[in-house]
Amino acid sequence: MTNEVANEVIVASPISAEDLLESIELADIGHAITDNQGYLIYCSQTFRQQTDISGDVTSLDRPWFRTDPATPATHDTRSALWDEFVGRGRRRQGMVRWHLQNGGMRYFEGTALPQPDGRVVLITNDRTDRVQADRTLKKTEELQRQALAVLPLSVCVQALDRTISYINHHLPHRLGMSTRAFVGRPVTDALGKDLDALADAIFRKVEASGTAVAGGIVEVTDGPLAGTHWLVYGRPLHEPNGTL
View 1: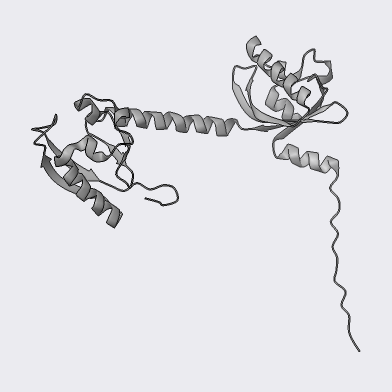
View 2: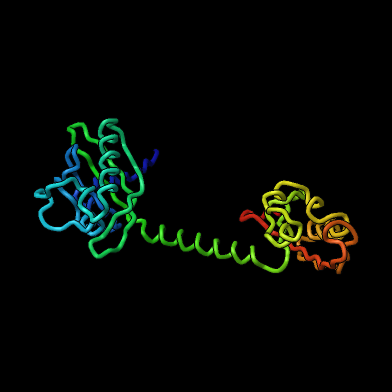
């Protein structure tokens, strides 16, 4: 005699279109339907909020991409891109800079999907926070570059083969050269033999230990820096993956 145990099969209920659209709305993703000229046939509440469009969208006298207070030149550029999209009949995706009625700005990632019946489905995903964060980061990085550039000391980043990948203005200015002239060249070309001997010793210690190393003071006895004294200090820099 054998006992047979039936495996229970769980069949998930299909998701209705209404439930799917509601989920999209809760995720702050806008959607709309237009004709092939860009006139709105329908739009979701999130799409309205992102584009500042109110009232009866079907009564608008212009395509959706001309409804914000952007400049005529911007509207013309969008029109040209829309005509190109419609002509190709293929999915298009890009970042849209949208002007708000209150003078603010919003950035959303827009996707246009052509349909067989000639209509177009639009999907909008607000990326304003990300764009603003990227701009803040770039501004901070630029301020850091400016700070490094004017420091009254020489900052030099060298690769493992001891070629220069970055150098601030201090040492090149002392030598009457540009920073561009040093990038990609061996460190010894920038430092000269006196400084390079100490810098090389520090480099090897940093490479071996993976920690910061402070060197002694060295006097430069030849070249354009002759008669000057320098304190050389080295520390490791790492890529995000930990590579030296």
